[in-house]
Image (cartoon, rainbow, N blue to C red; front, side):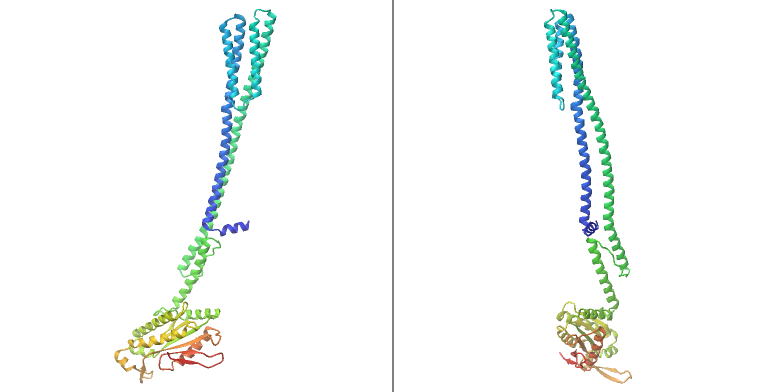
Amino acid sequence: MKEVISRLIRLSIGKKLLLGFLFYGSLTVLIALFALSNLDQLTAINTSITQTDIPLTEIADRMIENLLAQELFASRSSIIKSADVLSLFWKRNEEFKQLIEQMRALPGRGEITLEKLGLLHEEYTQLFKNESRNEGQSSSTGNGYAQQMKAKHAEILRLVKEISSSAREDQIKKTRMISEVGSRAFRVTAWLCIAGLLLGVLLALMITRNIAGPIGQLKLSTREISEGNFDHLPQVRSGDELGDLAKSFQEMAIRLKQLEEMYLDANPLTRLPGGVAIEQVLKTKLAEEAPLAFCLADLRNFKAFNDRYGYARGNEVILGTTEILRKAVKDHGKEGDFIGHIGGDDFVFVTSPAEYEKICKAIVRAFDQQILKYYDPEDQQKRYIQGKTRRGEPVSFPIMTIAIAVVTNEQRKLQSHIQIGEIAAEMKNFAKKFSQSIYVVDKRRDRSTEATGEKP
């Protein structure tokens, strides 16, 4: 039973509805067939009454009337010796024979009884003929024929009354049967209708609950998620479309939670993910033991530029650098590469060891080509800007350059995102010692101190 229920739950909504309609339709057909069967039985009984019992009773009554008339005409004929009376007797005699044939034509009549009735009537007719032929003979002979005719007439009359009584009894019996069949059909049909109605309501409640329940959970989860509660996930265990929708909804909620975290963590200027997202990407890469190249980019002399031209032009440089990183990763990286903005002039992109070199070269080249446009013409010609140290002493700051520190897991196994950050910070400080744009790669093995610097 549990297995059947489990299979029903796993059915699609369309199949559940179809199964419900088929069940209810089958029950309706069963009720209709039962009602039609009983109606057919009632029709057959009623047909038997109207086509056999009632006509048989009517014919029997006419036979009795005919027999009484024959007896009367036979008595008168022996007294008044009239040809007209005799003619009436023979006319009634022919009518009786026709009534026998009419009775014989009815369905379900008793053949043996009719044959006996016909023979008795023939004998009665023959006795009448014999009496008519021997009218001039002794009175004892005539009285003998008369007594025989009375006895035969009484026997015929008794047999006809038996036929009539039997037909009436059959009619009464069939009438009772009609009442019983009709009453039984009404009771059974009523119970079947009530049972069908209850089962239909139960089936509708089951299907409605199976549909309305998950929809209610999805509606509640939608409202909760719209209010920022991404942990309120719908718990739908059905295997139909609503179950699949609930699973997709759960995945969507998890993804929305991640996106919200990334959005809240994103830099308001560049809209790039911040420290939390960077940390999550590194944790995922390390957990999957995937090939990893963590690249930390920093703008050298950015603070001096910001002090000289103001934060608005400094923001332009940050946005320009963002576009350079995006284009380089898009052109030379692969799907799934990540770009983040820690803050200020510090950027991050994560790619694979096979791709970082092309990306870094493209960034250095594009940055050196575009950076001068952010300076005033006179500073472009001088190739430096004038500024002051924290002590107020005048100092010259060269045109900005970009330094990229690259940390990979090719030469050693990286243990955590913290270790990666520490190595990248160390490599960035090393890269900033160079006066030109450069990317440096940590090629040290475990417990080794070798690092290399490369210019494009």
